[in-house]
Image: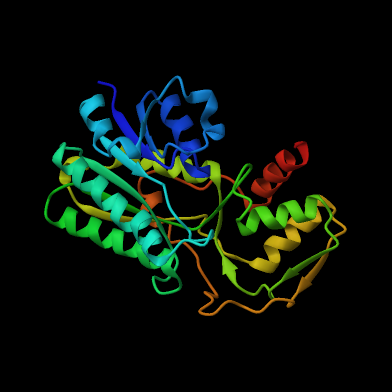
Length: 292
């Protein structure tokens, strides 16, 4: 029997790629969005998915679609557009908690959550994400639903949001802006290409025994951290950019994380491997950026 998956954040970078992969693998796909959501990232799929608006009731997809086997939650608020603390809490904690309660009441087996590797106290975004993950652990420990928490490292790829660091660096180098001001760049980050991220979600969806109703946590990255400086210099070299890289022009953030690298052993135990090298992923991203 064809399985049904409900996706939040389907209009986002990650969510849109997941919708495509789910449809390719033969899943029935429902998406839960806001009435004001732009659909340009999934416009080619709108006739192949069932779309529901949050404003019409979070429970509507469950009432209309019948049994929903899994929820993949990718919607998030980073707090980059002047949102208040409460608005961030509402988007990242209250909304998914309500969705999970409805999923439980409709006998959904699996909730896959997109979490962050950031320390919970670094900002309101990370704190709100941490709070919801704890609710997921609580629900799973009480046998209500299987909760898979994916702690996502630094995802990148063609078409990512302009607000992302990776996109900003690539676009700056492609367009040869005169100067690019940066921190000293000693922070080590684990960059993972979008195709490998999606492959991880899909492998988890296929492999996890959702009937056990347990909490599980997965780090999703390449498993190989490089410095921010290495990333920027690689982009600069591949693009042949004339942009002047001003390392040290900006200070580190308060509570800056100086090293982050995923332990991918749990994902590897499911049969997943990161297949795209950093250089290859950057080249693919640059190629599409240059074509625009």
